[in-house]
Image (cartoon, rainbow, N blue to C red):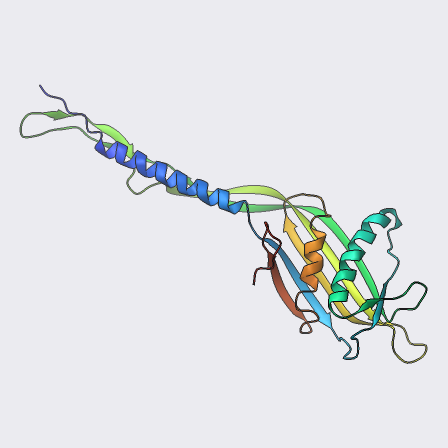
Amino acid sequence: MAIALHTHSFFHFSRARLISGALVLVALLSGCASPITARVSSFQQWPADAAGASFGFLAPADHTRALEQASYASLVATELAKQGLQAAASGQPARILVDMSVSSQLENRSYSRPVYQDQYIYRPGFRDAAGRIYPGYWMPDPFGPRYVGNQQLMETVQVSSLRLRLLDTQGPAGSSPRTVFESNATHEGRPSPLSPVVPYLVRAVFEGFPGANGRVQVVRFKADTGEVIR
């Protein structure tokens, strides 16, 4: 009595699984360089004669982070200089006052993820016309994993924010400085120090400055080079 082992289908599906696993690994590795994304909302009534105007910074409300705030202020100063403004000389009044604040907070969020389960089917044995017996065997379902429902998960997200206001002191005598530009930029990602994120938020605020009033845009940067993705 001859007994034949039917193994071709099993190895065929095993090979397909290995190829599928390799593709998933490539996708995960490429995902390590995901873009850095900032969502920006801006409002403006930018004066037409602001070119060459001087600017200065309002004192921050939080004096316990003076050096950190000064570092962030230098980033904003660089961007303002690119727009044709210049830092006010020491002891001299500035036309444009800069009011800025940065913050970060952790948020726990729930999300659902589809769950797929591997299925196996049983192929019963049989005897062919020559009398050879082929035993039954289990094999992966040719239709692949089956959807069995959703799994509820929790993740911790860090929301980093930059709020920037530019106030124009040029106006009728005795009038208060008026806001001519205000913007808020946020970045959501894994928990991490705030300082490496702020340069991207500052650049995002000034992308296309001053832009249309009420504009909302998403600015994306390459993680490896920091270039804006256009």
